Length: 425
Image (tube, rainbow, N blue to C red; front, side):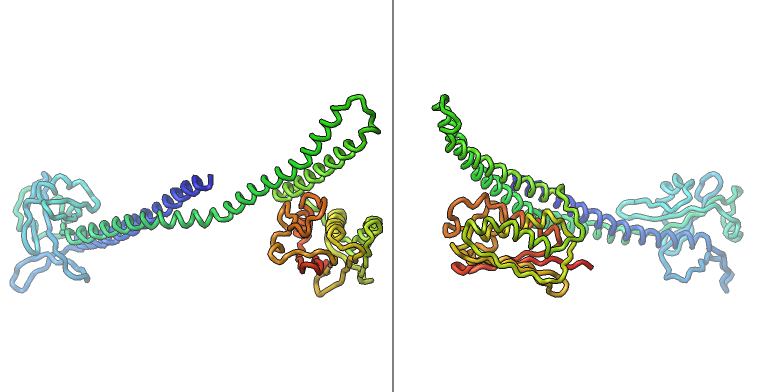
């Protein structure tokens, strides 16, 4: 699935990058072509609109154009009302071969391009305004002058535009190869968190299946024992019934924990925060755990500052958090050991600590303690220690309260859990 997604994302990313190259190349070419043609068209329109007749000292009448721009090769064509070419006036040489094509385009008012052989020309047509009387005399025609055309060659400009188009095409080709590489790298980068989430999900499913298999096997085995003696009383079968009840409770707790974490991951489980006395919640948790401490022959030392400690939180979730931490400390404490539960203010936060003198956690395992179904190595795995969801739930509760949780431990010396909650205001 991940490989297929990688291929699909590579194709999509490459297509998007390639399209961007094409769009940028098209825009570049379009702007260059527009600028070149607009300059030529502006020059043609200006020349034909500012054409005037002047007389030289020799008495000869010539056409002059009041243009401040450098002289450009222009040709002028005069057409009568019958669309007959009366005369062409030029600066360099006549191009009578263009007359046939130009005659067909007399009705066009805007600048147009025509091609003759390997050369390309740009021209503009304007109705005659009567401002060249001497030219009319020279033409000596009974048919009045109707249209004036001015034309210039743009072969060089078109050549360089084609060169630019080729360069853009080659750039797009190179860009296409780069887009595939970039698309692949972007897809790989984008899939890193997805791959991690996928691996985590697969590990979660495997761990959940493993954890559920054990109690289900016990329940199935005990039920088969009960069916062997259908005539026995409940008292006679109290042992298998108790085992079934224990495993059922274990599965129920596991499913509840998984449901809580799943709802938390999807942001469906909301915590309603209001001002809560942190010191009061800690003392209540210590009081609730005392019977278990006595049964396990452990000592609990509580050190909470006398000042009122207010935080924004959910009292029920905070109680669940402290019970998880105290329960873990009890499970892994040595016989006749001691558990320290403390809370003190440090700057703009309250620091809660839960410390035991149990077996400790190896340094290599510390980054894994908040993973779901983590139970540690065989040194800590002594007896029934639950499904390994407690610290995952604890971490979620702390996150929901905008706090931080940190665990330090040393093998054989015990474990310390430190939690910081922000102070109200």
